[in-house]
Image (cartoon, rainbow, N blue to C red; front, side, top):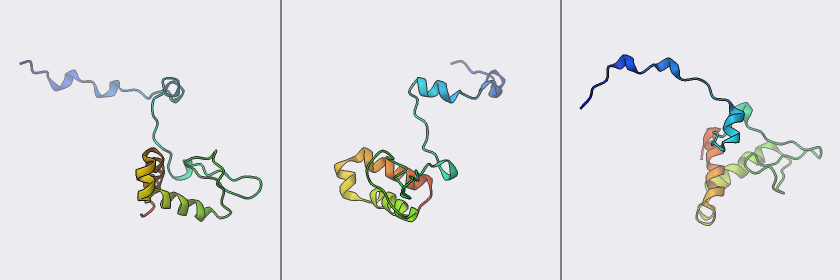
Length: 100
């Protein structure tokens, strides 16, 4: 057995990574939270889901978007039917610390 002294490990050797390099290598990035979370506001005064903005669903009131995400995150039928979609909604709700 070999025992290494603690000073062998340089804790300052870690550097920040380039996010564009991460995208090129297909590394997973965490979901944004707070002000970084994008809720798309369209010209017709509607909002889309922050989870899947390309989908057709749109809401007139911003709180309805939150209600939708929370409903999908707590939906047991969705969890059984499409676990990936349920997981995305649950992660957004958890990051935003929305009760549910």
